[in-house]
Amino acid sequence: MSADWIEVCGVDDVPVLGSRVVERKAGGNIAIFRNQADVVFALLDRCPHKGGPLSQGIVFGERVACPLHNWSIGLVDGVAALPDEGCTKTFTVKVDGGRVYLDAHEVYAGGGTSAPDVPTNALAA
Image 1: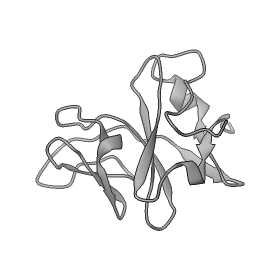
Image 2: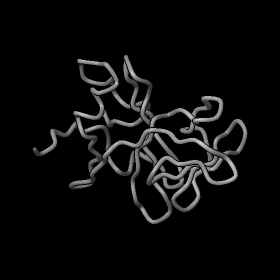
Image 3: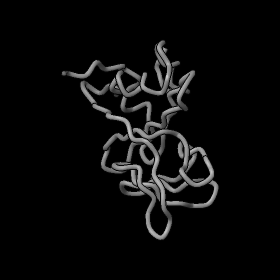
Image 4: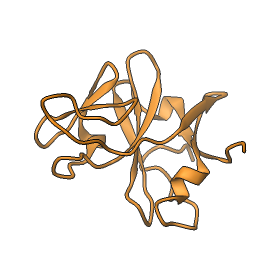
């Protein structure tokens, strides 16, 4: 089955080494990250440790440091680096024509049935 995609923002709307948030009514927000190599990732915006907002963390390589306790979370797999344990949900993301898309089936799996809200500070007018 091919994925249905939801356009969430432009690649340039996500700062290099930064993030943007896609707000959802159910299931928790999604953080969209962009690293130095211009690769885009998507994670549940919640650290597995104490629930810190990963979107406010520091991006380095293919990892993000949680702003609360500096846990290092993999952007590819959502797994915390040793010696820490735990993981956060990842979302399938694609970039096409300079636009960022999320897999609709994964976005709605959080319990929501309506479209996610506009990404915070992400979409052009």
